[in-house]
Image (tube, rainbow, N blue to C red; front, top):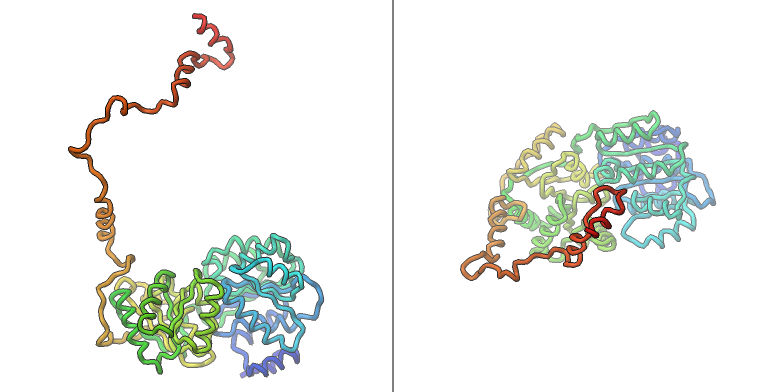
Length: 452
């Protein structure tokens, strides 16, 4: 097995890797290094947790020379703020013995502070597409010196609706540049982007999309509804030694908040929740508290699943079954990292059975079904999304039953009140007096009629 010593890295990078305790590159890091170093466009397909970040940072830093210029030479685009902060942190660790300026920019914070930071100069800019485009339009950031463009988690970007922003950013970049793209899945949208903007890219695929990570033990429960799932989760979390660091995924923000309220009742100081409606400071604080062990339960939405690099997660709980099988892979990839054993649980309702089958077909893997634990209350309470449509229609009817209905207390309008607004008597009288000319050119028509 090769080591980082076998790669053509600079002494400064070796010193940094030694400090971090890294000796062996992952397969995606090893196979990407020579391609990126050659300057060719590259597309890397690898599952979450396989070391994609170092795969593109190491060869880029290997060739990045010292410079005093203000405009950046490397641009790294990512879908979430959390991923910006994570990559900036990784670059900072690797450049401990180098003079490289790295700047992260993202929305949700004061843009003027980022403009001032940009004016100080940067070699590498890590950004979300929206804020980067805003800075470029305001001319606080000039992209004419970009030599290498990296797009990480490109499939998530396209899912989040960043397509047009990416296209606009491509138009601002110099034509001569190296394009590097990493993704966990290869979709039709990703293929279109590659065809439009990449030049004969080398494709490196480490794992077929959907291949389950071997060191993750996957199990599932058949559960009746949302609140029964919540009762099951609360029951499992009683074993604090086994469930010592639990990441719970929901598909929607409202479900995340609803679940957090239930968990908070039983474990008032042990949980936190993050999704896109939470402020940046709240999200950063929640992630830090969870990562450092102050909170052992973190509830998050799918949008957050790509931007979390958390250590030693004991369990990933899929509170609902994702409609898209690839999202399941991204979720469970948060555990079982760096060759550690991981545990994944999937809660499945009757309506979600079909989605579960799609996941198993994609992975070619049967998720083991566990018996439902005794003592867990099966709730009859339903969320608005779970209620039958007939009930919702009946509720609307009941809400409308308080409106007045005409009966004996009502009478016909009087002659005075039955009149309608005709637009004013002056306008009507003028219309009678001066009729419309038969032709536009007959200017004397009204004069002749008036004499009559």
